[in-house]
Image 1: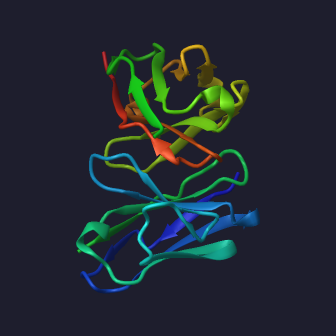
Image 2: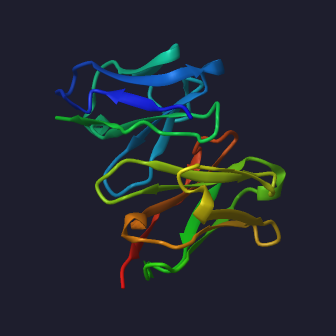
Length: 107
Length: 117
């Protein structure tokens, strides 16, 4: 079973700043089968990125994903007010298709 | 546009079975995709429960496997979740989701299920 560890747990930044969120895997995530989600209060998560670096339709280009193997990063180049939310990574290479514990991005 | 909608009791007694259904519109679940369930205890993170593919191949989280069953009814274009022998620890918002892979490209709004006598 692959365990995903996200850091930091909480990230406090201001609009306009750059955010860097990390996701570490306990074993290699082959083929970069790593996804990122954004969740706002009272809402279902929204898929932002898959394949570690491929944005879904509607994801702004200020979001970028990188990494391979066991270390992955979600970067938001210039934070907008609507970006403050909780972010989760998920691996989908091996069942169980586990989530990280989340990073809360707050103002 | 693919849409998912969960339905089922919002209150379940301890030791009983939790049952939820996810109705899918805009796509035929028999055509493919993965269809799964994720839950989120109040104030906590996401927990992947399991999914079904091609209507019959299932994948489960080992931590829940002995109590969970996911099935699909292609005639009604819906899939279901059953969790047996529930306790207060099973209280959560339950989301159904679907996608090309085991990722949640499409999500339901979520259904809060409380386990209490």
